[in-house]
Length: 430
Image (tube, rainbow, N blue to C red):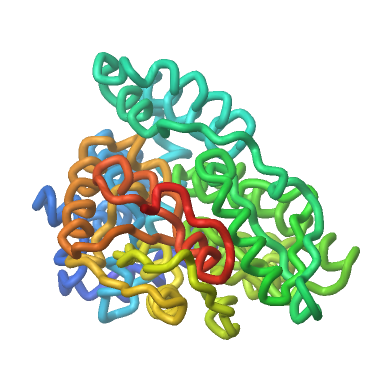
């Protein structure tokens, strides 16, 4: 793609990066076939290629974003299926992130939209506050059909049961069972702590069983993904720096870390991107790159280990594996979760349209509930068509979205692996 940035514009490192990305696009349109919003809506501007044109025009012409431009950029799920499909290697992830940052800087949203997005940005990254909000939502949940628009959609996402905070998520060190083979830090996440604390509990049991000392670092918090994908670069970079400092301290205080383990693939994609996010910050660039290099999805850590498979209370359910977009497209991980489940004795089936997003996409099912619901129902139907007994996924947002729109029990991959290696049966599994 030909570009016409001025030298003055290219003095901004963000524009230099985006120009290099734009130049790789050859207008081929392969991305349109795998873009969920284009598949649903059929609008060129709701395809990656269309959004690339909108962002290019906005950047090159220093144009104020219009309401229509913002609408199409907001509709992007950042599922990154287009990046997997693209034969030219267009780095759409970083281009759409830059586009959203520009929208946040230059466009003044309507008051109610600003308030709603700010509420999400304040509540979700803070587990204690988020849990309190869910308790309030639980009481309002029976009346959700009477609440219009996005607030009603948000209430629909409140789970039927709200678990108390888990002691596992507090700063501490869990010793390995037997000889220590590795020392790892576990990212406990934010929304996941409130929505399904059993995931972190299963992860700690599984890692310690396999000889890992597990550190829950003091000072660690939200990965920053939610605000980053809203274009709020300042807060997201602060979250990244806070985590970098926490993991650096953990490495100094108790011994070098072999890995930073992430069990929510949306968070993992972001932590692995800290090096890029902070590349233009001289104080943090090298430190961020080191942390990104240590980050691994839990299945990447486990795939090289010997799983001591237990009986798992007799017959094991048939598992439909849902590969989260942030796992398969964001991190390029597709084989290890399926391999691990099969090695643990589960029959694993994979659904049709496995490349299409379920509609969760961070806060997308709260900000774009109509499109999200259509994608959620489509995904749930494809999973049910496998004839499986339970759905496994590596991302909490996907679990909640699929559970909302389908009838199958949904749990995290590590919960099934923990059960198969001697842990408790996951909630909801028959």
